[in-house]
Image (cartoon, rainbow, N blue to C red):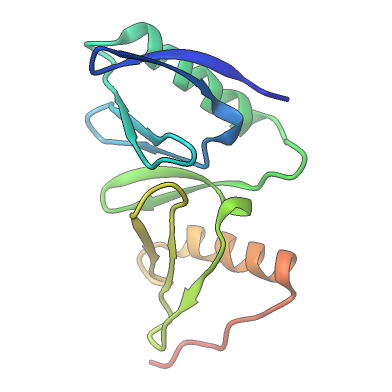
Length: 144
């Protein structure tokens, strides 16, 4: 089911299917960033300068975080002082390093997400559970 919304960004109007957006970044200053599907253009919505579109984005995020959607696996990950809300089903590869960290790249952007088992244990466990559930693979224990 498509969820289309009209968003104004830098004087341009975009009509975006939020069902195709794979990640949102909620910054400490209140801004929300997402990347347009298939082109990696970041859209940054500021609550002060664009309150109507900001509300649209937050309503969509609230909608999918409160409801279970078929074929999606949204997870909140705190990384680099921001909260990322990511559909793990859209991630195409995961890298497990010898020190235990897991790295993956957000689709439609070049941003790597690096999760440390010590400093981000809840998100780390969620990603490990997802990998095992979807692929059947386990990562080896980290070497300390």
